[in-house]
Image (cartoon, rainbow, N blue to C red; front, top):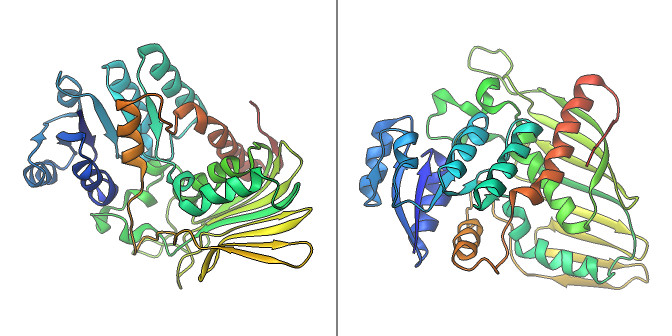
Length: 344
């Protein structure tokens, strides 16, 4: 049995972590902590768990095996490192952290303390993405030449339990906007699918439409558009946007020497594979989840199952470093107006 504490009891904890841990036969929600103590106590009562008065009290609990970090972006690194040093395994929500140095410190803390650090990059687990990687690895479209990948929706306004105090728009707590919320997902995904890494970035990050109630622009980017050059020679675009007010777009299209693969682009088919010779194959493996239609993420099951049996796969912090390097290169590119090489 893996006994878990959840730090941060906002929407992501309420929709994903709490119900998914509760549903796992080998996980027990030991306790909860949130800055809002009324919320902590209410959810602790609902899940028959302990309400910790502080994060420090949570980490001092000898009955606790692991911690889910579901706090605002700026707290990810400090809370993860503290938990790892306290001898707890950590599942941290994306983005991993808000600086590359912090990401690397998290990985180092996991290694030095002999604990597991997993990041919630759940797009790797979507059934169509798993199938698409299998097809790509088999040479289904030949050598990859270009691609486009995007994640767009109307913004995180409904993805908070406190709309009047939306930390997603607060530069101090979020640091990045659409890039941290959506762009990291698609950057990590393109690494996962292709087996290549981003080596150079030309990026635009800006606030084009989102405003506070007083009419002033929000403190973070609502759109991020990046050109990625890959280690295998492919070049592609990654778009993250909070200004798609008519739905949600989570598509990836890959163009190769022998065909084109369209993932989550056609509402009727999760993968459409078009061959250069004219034939078309359809793979109807699942439907992508959306903010309004949540399905089981698979992240909690993966984390718990790996802790119980380390031979089972998981999404290590170290494996996410390459995507985070590309994200921080994109921030630098947007600030300087020039292409930035990605080191490492």
